Image (tube, rainbow, N blue to C red; front, side, top):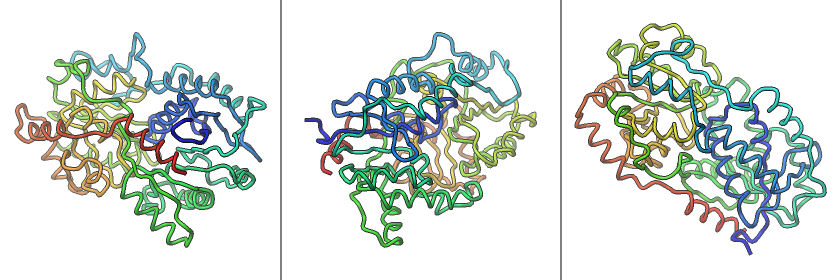
Length: 427
């Protein structure tokens, strides 16, 4: 008998949709961590992909192959023998080279992006490992909520009352801060919430803040509340710092790292403004993230500003090993977001014992506790002072931040999934 008592069917629709893209968002990484764990578990039954009237089923072996491929694609597998983007970035940080393409940006494409991945993606959208299907009394586990705005995809759950749908709800930010999302996205997201409210027999979430918001939303809609499990996510970059993460040549150069999709909610514009204000003597800044919406001001600044071109680089597609080294040897990770559902980069940095400067918003207070330095996302002067202070050799403030970061007790993967499986086993 597996820990969950019921067989697990895992929705792979989101993973398939990301086959021909570089997947660097927090939801992508969490979806992969879940798929990796449950596809290897004894109770795993099959994968499901949305269909018109019913989902297509993938057998366990196909799901595991998909996970292995996705691991390589997003760099969660071992690093390749040569990683040009990382090698170029290291050389730039160390001042030994500034080669590359457009100033401020280092593009990267995955090993199988393009037509090959697109054709595979199309095939997986219609494939069915007949006669595989969701077994009776299974738990249907969905982490990403991709396509939840299309209610017809989930009509099959009405015909399968034996199935227990469990959804991981990351946040309800589009309902609370529609100004930080594309026009019309609030309505689209509201339809996603309707799917959750209609079908969820249990919910997993990542913080007490989000749990309270879910309770309020159910109350507003006047529907019974399902069981909710709160569990802080572990770092997708893996466990704590090791000697392999240390690089004296990198740490000797003052640089900062900011991780997040390029979009207004992440507050890149404020950071670039203060970096420009510091001037040519500014420490180096590495932006890690995919393109989001309304990113033109940030991209224009990176490609056209001579000051920023010399001290700011943007990358994507780094392997996990490279990301660990990049973050582990930085002066600090900076997270000036206006709003977040969880803030995985803070957990990643603190797990590696790296000082973290984060927005003074409730979610970071909950997840980072006393281990981060908090500054209002509107306080540009405060951010500028902190950056300049942390960049100074022997800074007392930075040494204190290192001490606090290394005292952080991070959530880890084994107890995380033990708690999740215990919750699923109680349903």
